[in-house]
Image (spheres, rainbow, N blue to C red):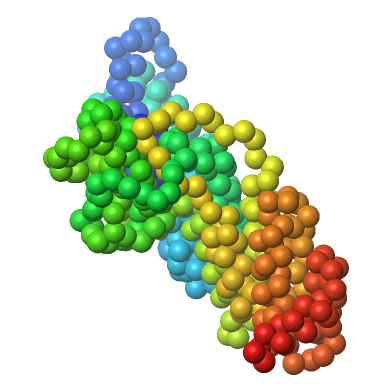
Length: 428
């Protein structure tokens, strides 16, 4: 239930209207509750004239409308820039930026506060205590607006920059990997191969965004059976591909329970970062691939992405002990390390094979990953060898190719014999 709630809250964060709506509601409530001071405060209070309150509220209303309009225009420009210089797949992370959403909510909330306050004050809604309370709230709102604006200006200047986008994607991927390290089987038990049992098919075509393992456990307990999950978050499914298999202690018709199991799988048209660590690696590789395109020609960004990929994959070897399974009736397959390496390095090795700076850094990062953990060494070696073979085909300048071979040999031994072996394979 907690994981499901986290997934839903993440989707709400990607809706720009949620926080402004809450800010508007709080503004209206604050203005109306100021009237309670007239009933609760007895005796003399400092006099605040209605004219001063109304005039100040008019100034706030006019300025907040202009600032809110400017904020929306700036955010839209930053979103468009992010899609052009990075990748459209990073858009949900840019939209979910808390500082920008909080700023827009503050500006719109202050505007609504002013409009409602003007309407109430000009119609005699407040007494002396109410006007003083409204004036105090107005000062608080001004302080919040100024602090928010100063912080937001710094953020909006960085929001559409490639470095900030890479940082956001890396942070989201690291969080997904950390959750998967704590729950390598999403709270269930390791799946045994091959999958057997009654298949459960979905009705939608798209990507698996979330698997509610707790719900699968609950429904499986109700029907006294076990479930073997067939698809992980990020898998593209269609009605012909089973979502899971039901394993009954004895043969009986469980078709009536299929709908309950189908509802545990959230399927959408786009992949999400929350439960899909591979998607974050794919997005980082896309950013590097676009930077390496002839139209942009920015190998520095690709080199920076390689550093992010090394940090993410190296964290897999430094994780702590996983949490004990809580859903013993649900078997879930593990995330394959070779898939993570393929998602991370294949595209960069292909697009950067002819750029010596990228080829050298790729060999360095793969070599360091091989030293990080014996479990990663074989995969890192395989991708280093493939990257070297791509460079041998793409680099036409012999000294550049010699540098790449020397870097490869620095981590994996002599590359001359490897090159001769690859040449022999090509002749065969």
